[in-house]
Structure formats: structure tokens, C-alpha cells
Amino acid sequence: MKRAFDLALSFGAIIFLLLPLLLVALLVGLTSKGPILYWSDRIGQHNKTFKMPKFRTMKTGTPALATHLLADADSYLTPIGSFLRKSSLDELPQLWSIVKGDMSFVGPRPALFNQYDLIELRTRSGIDKLLPGLTGWAQVNGRDELPIPQKVALEIEYLEKQSPWLDIKIICMTFLKVLRRDDVMH
Image 1 (tube, rainbow, N blue to C red):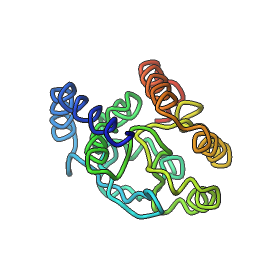
Image 2 (image 1 turned 45 degrees about the horizontal axis):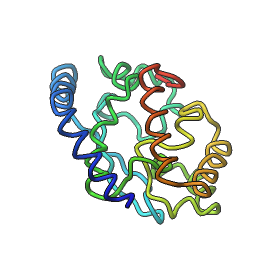
Image 3 (image 1 turned 90 degrees about the vertical axis):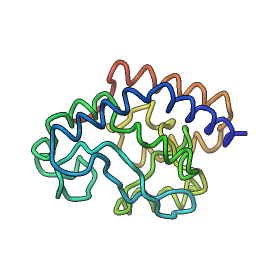
């Protein structure tokens, strides 16, 4: 049932957001050199690596690290990178990952391949069995601001309480947080 929900919602979102997707792609291409999409190696379900697309917000050649680990992260941003991140528009290409089956709308955010501490905690807690999500319980309860142990605690709570109604609640909460730009870094 969750897969059918993901497919229906992602196809609907792609159709509804087609014009904004094209506009953002055009703006990324016009404001900085390099590819429009950045394909990031991420850790998915059962700790399998997959390629996750995002609109590119960083200059080409930026180290593949979590943004908070970069010294002077702002210096790596493209001219529209900060706006894309704060508005979460950079995340829209992940609808492709949902269609493909690498991600779900709701689940733990996929870890970078080199976030070993997060991957280890998730594996010990059984969170690695979940399909990663475009948004999740930790996202709506702190987003980028949460320390890893707190993020994993919220993901465990989601694992134990997951239901279609909780997913719908998380999607609605995400929409409100994005509109208000709550808890967003860079």
C-alpha cells in the first residue's frame, strides 16, 4: 500500500510541479557552470548505495561532505544555491528516486555514503530496514539542526509507530515547515 501511495503521489507531484522543475533546471544551468543535477551516493534500504539526484546548489568540485562539515560552506554555494536549499526546491529531483523505488515519500533521510556514525547507529537500531524518505519524522522535528543520536531516536520512534496516517501527518508537517523555512541551514 505504501508503494502505491508513493507512486500515485510522486506522479501527481511531477505533473503538478513540471513547470517549476523546468524553471529551476533552467536557472541552475544559467547561473553556474556544471551539470544541472548532482547525483549523490546515498545509503538506502539494507545499507545499499544508490544515486540520489538533487538540483546542484554547490559549485563543481565541492568535497562530498555533509554541508555542516565544510569549512565556510557558503563559499561553495552557487548564486542560487542558498535559495534552492532554503526553499527545498533542490530536493524535487528526488521524486525520480521515489518512482524508481530507491526512496519513499516518508522515511529516514538517506545518509551520505561517508556518514559512518549515522549509518552505524541506524543499523544497530534496525532503521536500515526502512526505505529512505524525501521527508521523515526527524525532518519535521528539527531537520538539519538535530544531533545524530537525537535524529536516530526520532527515526526509531517512526519505525515503531509507522502507519499511513503518520505518513500523511509528516507530509503535511513538511509542507508547513518548508513554507515557513523552519530549521533550515544554508
